[in-house]
Amino acid sequence: MKLITKAKVSDAIRIHELINSFADKGIMLPRSLSEIYENIRDYFVFRESKQVIACAALHISWADMAELRSVAVAESNQGQGIGDRLMEACLNEARELGISTVFCLTYQPVFFERFGFTQLDKMELPQKVWSECFRCPKFPNCDEIALICHLKVSKE
Image 1 (tube, rainbow, N blue to C red):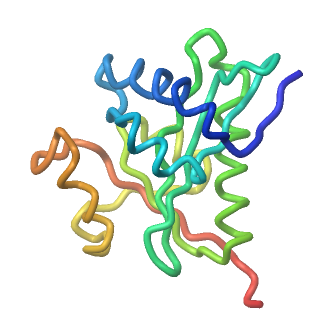
Image 2: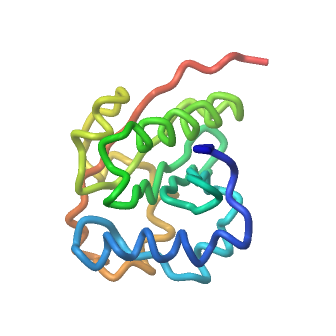
């Protein structure tokens, strides 16, 4: 059975393995295990027979802004639309929370552009976004591409 759910604390080690398998290849930024535990509520996971084979996170940055991060699908499971389903789960959660702007920093802009993200200069992102950059191994020489998506949210 294939299913998307919110991550559990017990999923953190597998999420860490997934993300860092791509970070080791230079196509994603690494995440520490402690960072994953601290932000476990941000993550969605995709399970196949109870095994986590993919993840994605929606990290709230401000009242109207969130970052989509750590979209990773095990190599043997790519090309099946799993990443698309995780993206939709994150974007739907952003809408439900009333977040109108979602951004990401990535080496894979084409994937995100399929969901309405457009490229912008990193310097156009609000300063609040940069608070976590100091922990990044690439700081201050970030070579990721910034993208942004404006969502329609209901005013309740």
